[in-house]
Amino acid sequence: MRALIAGNWKMNGLGEDAKALAEGLKGLAEGGQPACDLLVCPPFPYLGLVAQTLAGSRIAVGGQDCHGATSGAHTGDTAAPMLRDIGCTYVIVGHSERRADHGETDAQVRAKAEVALAAGLVPIVCVGETEKERNAEQTLAVIARQVKGSVPAGMEAGRLVVAYEPVWAIGTGRTATPADVVQVHAEIRRLLVGLVGEGSEKVRILYGGSVKPDNARELLSQANVDGALVGGASLDAESFWAIAESA
Ligand code: PEP
Image (cartoon, rainbow, N blue to C red; front, top):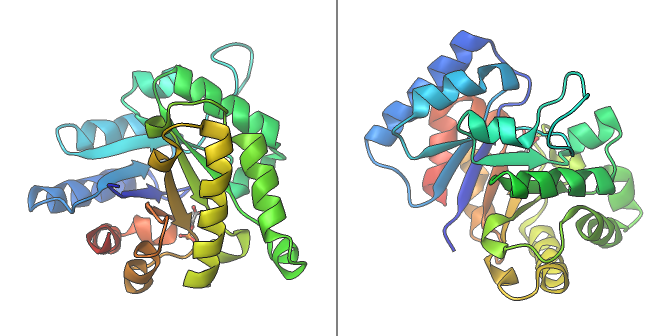
């Protein structure tokens, strides 16, 4: 399966930073693109700017979130059709920072993924256990609950991405061990068989959590690891590119 390397820029930088990063990536892409799909998810105010800068390149642009409704009285929120309208093709939903900061539930995350799919976007549905849950040996139970609750059932497999992001590994410099990643990704794949049915093997399962140029190759070579969701290291064009070249 062709890997997806996705950069989540989170709430970092101003317009000039977003433009410079996008231009840096576009320049690297002109020298030849790695054998994987590439995606960047900039902050909302700069999505249009980045989409314009990357137009004509093979680097896709996505939102970091969308609302669970297609339009309406939801002050401050962004609808999936709006993201599609400005050139996005993907959207991250259920990132642990949104689950923690905004109390998003699995049902809300599923609604977001459903409207994203209906709008023609590919949702990247994030799941992952906290450190406390991991220490209590609840990782697989938490993942099962989140996947069953957040992933829309019966969806076209090629249009769905799931990201396993252990919360304790995000932005900490700690990563799950390859053995942990293999175990959790195998469990996600097994759960997807029941949820998606035929073609479930086509759902890309990304790993996220302190992926860097020096650990990417090992993580990306594990079974059922079909790409990476990258936070910190995606803010530097060269680092992001080095990760993509490991895929
Ligand atoms: C993320 O938040 O999606 C992420 C993986 O962040 P980092 O790479 O910085 O751990």
